[in-house]
Length: 235
Ligand code: UDP
Image 1 (cartoon, protein in one colour):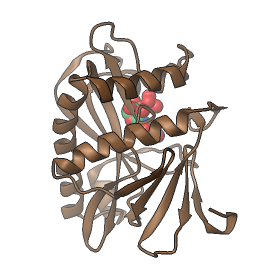
Image 2 (cartoon, helix red, strand yellow; image 1 turned 45 degrees about the vertical axis):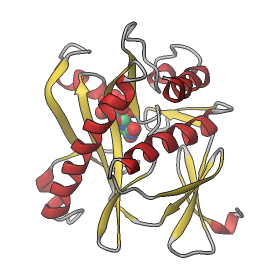
Image 3 (cartoon, protein in one colour; image 1 turned 90 degrees about the vertical axis):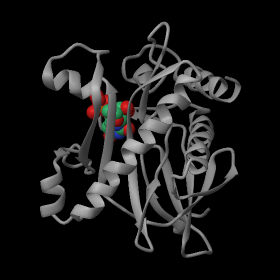
């Protein structure tokens, strides 16, 4: 892991080249950011917790037939993953109203939706990740129609698998963000699944157990993520 092997530095992870051209190393950082990087803090322990939570979620999805980039965890904060061409899209799935949906439509937070919503956002820090619809994704040649349909189908399938996975540990899965990549003609799930990219509410108290704790100054984020990991491994 040297500076010249660094391929990409993100807000929560660095990605490094490996000796194998088909594989890259993802290193989770302790940095927490919100509001497109405007709020930023180092929270010791966060990287390890996200790496472990994400590994648990990915392992569960893999066992249930979802193809992902995860090869294996190399340490408590490092994962060896398949190198893919990542679509510059954030694929958001929502089960319960919260966040930008509430702001946009002035609706009550915490309403269970009649059916899950899928939204695409175009990944661009400079543009602040704008909403993008299917027709724009297609016309701007970000993904073809078949790939868009497949990504949506996969996102809904992942949602159906994750709702009971989190429910078993007494969490409501409110919403989450996925990313997809293509390798050898196959679309697979990439990036991470952690409380940084989803909303988890305690089923009884409805307390946030995710990055909203940091966004809204609601308490100790590392302690919260630790409880998420503990509940996922013990319940
Ligand atoms: N999300 C994310 N990265 C982003 C934007 C959103 O991981 O750049 C996640 C966010 O944590 C939440 C879901 O996607 O679980 C929906 O986010 P929303 O559109 O409500 O935006 P927010 O209000 O969280 O910025």
